[in-house]
Length: 437
Picture 1: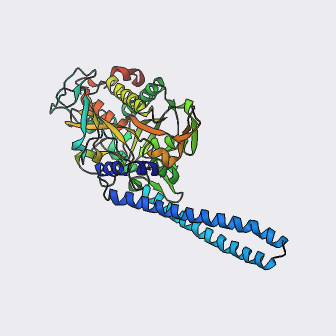
Picture 2 (picture 1 turned 60 degrees about the horizontal axis):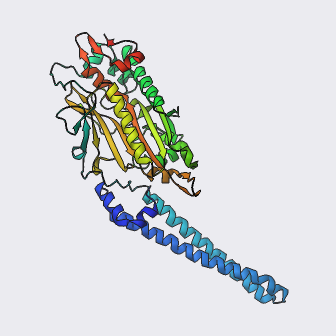
């Protein structure tokens, strides 16, 4: 949630940033926030004046009674009673203005950083790095092969059937579309990737968390999934609980209403969870097989940091995710998302995509974001500065490291050969073999 200080300090920049995110009615929304804040301040001033007057009159009542001026004392008591009623009215006006202001602020997205490119959709994202020749960005990394668009390459859903790795029809039978059943070597590959990603996160200094996969509404509001993504979340209506769309929600909410000492930052957590997304309206070839699921496995990395260090934290997270893709020997690229393609809560976001040689397309496998103070303001996640003991809002960051479905799709499609499907060297100790046969 935007802070009032942000808006008052540079209203023009806030409005321009919201327009970069293609938020309709940005100027009107910000002006309404300020109008409601003016109402609150006006009611506060009136309340303070009435309270001061009531205190002054209350002090005089005892003196009047001592002097035998009972009639004047009773008049003074009546005045204080009227002022109490006025103060209650001012309190109600303040609460009403604050509630309306907060409700409005919850619908306003985060302001993107200046380096976020202009644009309205994914086509406007900026490729900043690639380890694949001729696919935009700087050609870097460890990839030494060539992207092969051989038509003979089988897509992962056919490979899954050929090697009995994943049964999509069984998933439909017991749950519905978007809930695959992993079998045998397919299940082992899932477990291998989960253990590999967690082990790499542990090496990088992340403390593993095993959180619940259902959260209350306060947690959804804390990280910004509510009210923005309410239609995409599975809601358990009887208990008013939500299935998590990502481990970001429960892990970041560990620090809701918490003040952290500066010397404890940055906090680095990772978590493996199942994730649930309704993905309403998704259809077509882009959702076939593992491309888009309602339930999937993901390892998330989360950081809580100071404003001064969050940029460095973000870069470290990007390097961590890139290192995973290099170890998996996958062709990848990194994109800086445009304003129109960024999430509601992010101030800066980079997507990692891997290339699918059978589908001839790029598949998103990670989004790594800096939220600045936006989530922290909702969460009341703060830190106490060592130097002056002042309490300030933290910065929050998170990223997928990594989401499994499209990684599995790319591994199967890109590594198929006559003998079977080759397992990358870094993954072999976790999988227990060098090949799926």
